[in-house]
Length: 110
Image 1 (cartoon, helix red, strand yellow):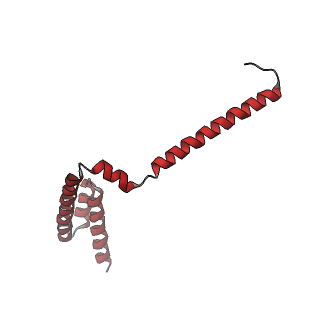
Image 2: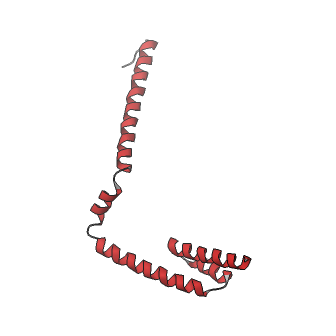
Image 3: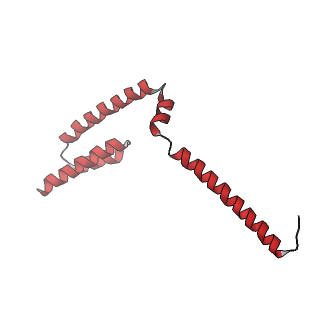
């Protein structure tokens, strides 16, 4: 309803702001509780069906990284390693290649 009393308008606006503030606090608490849930319990629940498959994929990835590591040891050119780095798609692959580049550069400095 419309009111002409300025003091009453201020009280109404204050009450509205207070309600909005309380609603925001509730929303933030809800988000915080969702954000910091135990990773293990939710991960286990989500991954029950896919666990054997994910373990298999993880083993394959580890084997591929071991093979890549052996190949990188055979390469003695920083340029070749840089080309491989640009072509690599996975983070772990790039990590291994960067380590090999650092190793070669350290050997060159020595």
